[in-house]
Image (tube, rainbow over all chains, first blue to last red):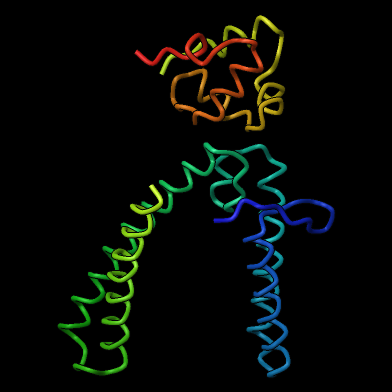
Length: 139
Length: 63
């Protein structure tokens, strides 16, 4: 994750959070234009929540808040965040495989849900292979 | 890893926050270093050693 800072309403938040917030707000605008006002409102609140939580995390001085929002300020934050993401990855793998096994047993072969679960497993397996090669090469 | 960061910081009357700002890390990183819960990168170790006019070997006990 990028740790570069972007000035946002007079304070700096990570570029990742700034881009995420802008994308969510653009989604809110598109939803509003399409007449989906509930979705637009939910997305607008989500965008505001991303910005506010990121700014609060940076001003609170709490490393836990920084890890929860991805507002990383130094090498220890980055190291801890890597471990957090590793835990998220393991849980994601386990839950995806459990859902896949359940889908194989319960869903009609080649139905949309069946294919979607198979696709998720394949994407995760591919990500594992690519990430392993890239990380090993970069040392 | 044991370090003399806490000892040298106190000698100079610095808070963890002030030392963190001086070397570009958070207060929590200085705290974790002092308690031996975090091993610094080579870059941070060198920054700390230079800040205290010391050497990495004098500041950190790797044994």
